[in-house]
Length: 409
Ligand SMILES: *Cc1c(COP(=O)(O)O)cnc(C)c1O
Image (cartoon, rainbow, N blue to C red; front, side):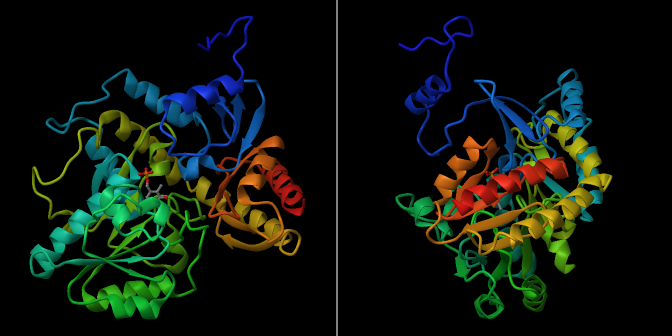
């Protein structure tokens, strides 16, 4: 039996990895680093090595690790009340919802926990709205989604995934979804019918490799939804909350959604906080008992969420993401032809396609780890770069230099 000790017999990273592999399910393939502490853009492993975080928990850590304002808000709320259930009112919920609605320019908030729950909630609300308000015959509502989407891991959500790894062996699947190619406005137009409750899109597809749709696609999706009386649901769980510069990735095209799903950074990297925000006449269809969550909208989550909203309310992170993102994209563009085939993205978010003949995405991530940079591949040969928005330009350059070395090798 392995013994774990901090004293003279020091526990090595390999001991912790062996423990994970023996006792936790194998639904991830993590890089061989064991993190023990973190602050800002940096993490420290159990051996005392420091690494620059170029992934930010897939944008859950937009404000870096343990942002002092967020930790203070959590600590203060830990000393007051953490959970009431929604059987009772508490003094954080209404303020959280009002502040989030004001920040996002929306009318109503449905608080949940994980991103997948926010998406599930939006789908349920859209179906009920279609039956009760739009007048779609019961049981026939359709939701149009895009190929190569990522919206989470529940049975309903993987029902309309086009990634075989995410779907295989998990059927039977939830019906009522129509899939069209992402970025193809003509295909979207052809798929929308009078039974369409909603079109669900990621304004930029993260998991697919940071795919930015053609100019005008999102505005055309908006127009088609208006024409058909269907809802536009923007999944901004990863693209939102300043990751691409503005609050929402949709803002780049001056498009408004009827519903937005938010998550990841909304919990400040401290705890899971998600929400559906949007039109009151749509979210307002829910009546008591029809939907809910034991933990959704709990006082601790609301207090941390409110601190996140205050940080975003300053505009500082949007500015940093825009300015540093321009620097990131200028520098990454110089690597095209130097081991990089293509760069995509906006703000502090980039998909870096490694050129054929270069390392695989996994090999590149491992090589970056050896150079003290944490990054992760997606779909074989794409590196997904998403540094925390608190990163400095010097730190950003250090990570980009490491990527340049690794892709050229
Ligand atoms: C991460 C993510 C989700 C799912 O969020 P979880 O908190 O992992 O359930 C949904 N949509 C998008 C776009 C995401 O990036």
